Image (cartoon, rainbow, N blue to C red):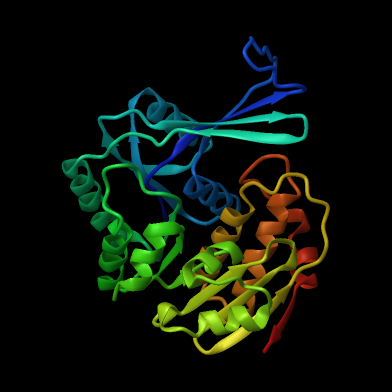
Amino acid sequence: MIVTITMNPSIDISYPLAILQLDTVNRLSTVSKTAGGKGLNVTRVLKQLGHEVIASGLLGGYIGEGIKTELETAGIAQQFSPIAGNTRNCIAILHEGHQTEILESGPVISADEAEQFLELLDSLIEKADVLTISGSLPQGLPADFYVEIIKRSNLANKPVVLDCSGEALQQVLESSHKPYLIKPNREELSDLIGQPMENKASIKAALQTNLFAGIEWVIVSLGAHGAIAKHHNTFYQVTIPKIDVVNPVGSGDSTIAGFAAAIAEQATAEELLKMGNTLGMLNAQEQTTGAVNLANYQSLFQQIQLTKF
């Protein structure tokens, strides 16, 4: 069983416009509305892989009910903790080759709502083989809230795959409670270290600092250039084949799904790296976020090259 945690989900709304006209009415006939949030993308891919998965986090209001309904229709198991506020919308306006995003911050979470979620979490940890935590924290939760989730998971010896950035990630790295795997990208790593990551040597040096001590896997995403990974004291350069990208949104989440699945399956280090990166590429080849065509899985899997350095 894999438990995916999305603390700040949303309805993702896409408005495709040939031209965005300011200070007037824009009408369109096609609108895409999807239950969103990084953790829900992870959930969808795990479902397609055939893994038993439960989606959890916080949901509230009529938007939260809409997300529940969409997940039920997709046959995805869920155990969300209720909140009084209304779950947020996130809007992307696609116009003239650009993407303009309007992202609501979401509801403010009370201390009682936070505690209620943690009580639910304890019951989910008992069932879980692996937990994933994805995305931002909503307002009202302390910046170290993910530390508490990891602490409780570690006490039960359940590995946590963490995909977040900013202050929430900084709090985790400075804590004594460590996730099993994290996946910053090059820019996020640069922000953490305070200097540019110009090549694999600089990335390797950064990952050898005390900031990442105690984390079994640190995998730095390089987009189309693959990844640099640290597993204990072994470093890998991951080289991926060139693909035709249709929609890269959600590829990082699909990669996380692959890592979580590999951990649950007790895969080798090499298999973990290949599974995650294969699923990330498969998502990028699809128009739908959080979707993969597994018919192409083996072909891409076999083209990934791993080099220790």
